[in-house]
Image (cartoon, rainbow over the protein chains, first blue to last red):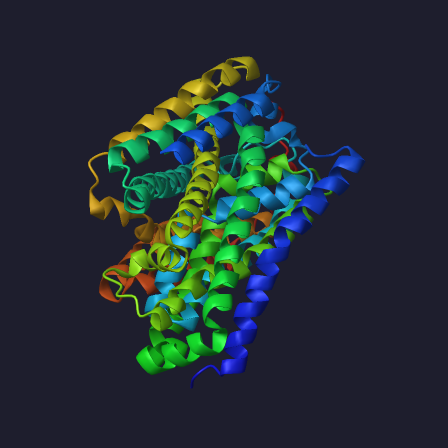
Length: 40
Length: 462
C-alpha cells in the first residue's frame, strides 16, 4: 500500500512549515520569559 | 576552517560569559534550578537533535522510506512522555541532582549500581559515537582531517561546558536550535522550489516504490523499536533528569511537552532531503552520505557550508549536554557517594572542571583510533536503556514497585535485548528489552507486600 501523492505532499509541507516557524515561536517564548524576568 | 574557528570562539566566549556567575554547585550543575520555558524548550530540542537526526534521518528515509522518517520522528514521544515524569521528579526529589539519586533512594544500592553501569555505558557509547561522528562528518564535509575535527569539536565543548556549566550548555543550545531548524527548513524549501513535490514523489515511485510503501515490515519494526529506544534513552539518562531539576516548577511540563511537539517534524523535514536524490539522479555510494551529497548538489558550495553549520551545531548541542550530565553523574554518584561521602558543596564544585576534562580525555582516547565498531556501540545500548523504562516509571508512581525486581528487570531486559540484537536484528533490541523488563517489574510489583514511603526520596541537601 503506497502513500498517496497528496498525503506525501501534506506530510512534507506540514513538517517543513512547522520547522520553519519554530525560530519565531522560540524567540517569542524568550521574549515572554524576559518580560517575566525568568530566562534562568 | 574559518567557519570552524568562528563558531569555536563564539561558543567558548558565550560559555564563559553565561557561566561567570556560576560559583555555586547548583548554579553550575543545574543552572540555578529556575530555567524558563524558552531556554527549556530550546535545550531539550537541541540536545535531542544530534548529528544522527540531521544525518541519519536522510539515511533512514533513503533505506526505509516513509517509515524511516516517521520512525525517527517518534523519538519525540519520549520527550512528551517525560513531561509528566519531570513534574513528578521535581515534586518527589526537590533537592536531587542526578537520575542516580532516585535509583539509590528508591531501590537501594544494588539497583542503583546496576543502573549506574547501564547509564555510564550508554553515556560513553553516545559520547564516542558523537565524537567519531564529529571527526568523520567534518572530514567528509570540509576535508578537515578526522583527528583535527575531533580534537577541535571535543575541546571546544569541553572548554565551554567547563567554563559555564549547565547555563553555558543551555544558552548555546538555544542558539544552536535556531541555527539547526532554520538551516533544515531553508534546505527543504529550496528543494521543493527547485523540483516540486510532485516530481519528487513520481521519481521515487518510479525508482524505488518500496520507500513509499506503508506496509514495509522492516520499516514498521524499526518504528516501534525506535519508540522504545528513544523512551529508554530519555527516561533513564541524566541528560534529561538534570534538566528536570534545572527547569522551574512551573516550566518543566511545558518545556518537555513543547520540545517534543516541536522536535517531531525535524527528522521528517531532514529525511525528505534523501528523496530529492531520486529526481536529481545523484549516485549515492553510501546511504549515510545522502544528506550532504544532496545539499551540495542542490546548492553547490552554499549547500556544503549550510550542512557544515547544521552538523556542527547538532554535534556541539548534544556533546555539551552529555559532557555536563555525565560529569554530574560521575561527580555525585561515583566520587561523592562512593569515594568522598563527607565532601562539601564547595569541594564538589572545585572538582567539576577536572571531571569534565577527564571525561573529555577518555572520550578522545576512545575516538582517536577511529575503530568503526566503536561507532556501533550506541546501537547496543538500545537493549540496556530500554530495560530501565519500567523500573523508573513504576518507581516514580507506585508504592509497591519492588527493588529486587527493578534490578532483575534491568539485568534480564538487557540480556534478552542483546539476544534479540544478535539473533534477529538491531531493530528488535529495545523492543524485547522493554517487554522483558515490563514483565519482571510487573511480577515484582504484584508480589510486593511493602509500601514505599515517597517521603524517603526527599534527601537533605549536600
